[in-house]
Length: 80
Ligand SMILES: [Zn+2]
Image (cartoon, rainbow, N blue to C red):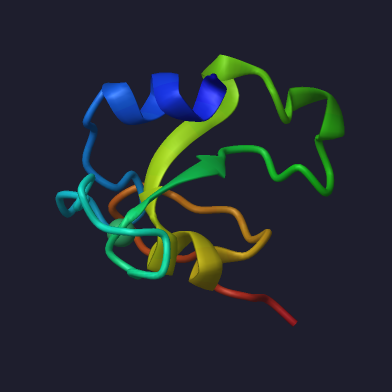
């Protein structure tokens, strides 16, 4: 239900700020996916916390991985 509730908000992608195609199938990279603001891998207890969910393109979600994102500023640069 968390996914459905998030989709029902019809929000734009929180990563690239472009509209999401809510009618696209799951094999379409422009389709909706639920992203976790705090990654599940490091914040398992927030995986089902509604305030931790964000609407994102499947493509953006995939390319983000577990990196931190600052909305509107692109990906945080890796520092080595
Ligand atoms: Zn996007």
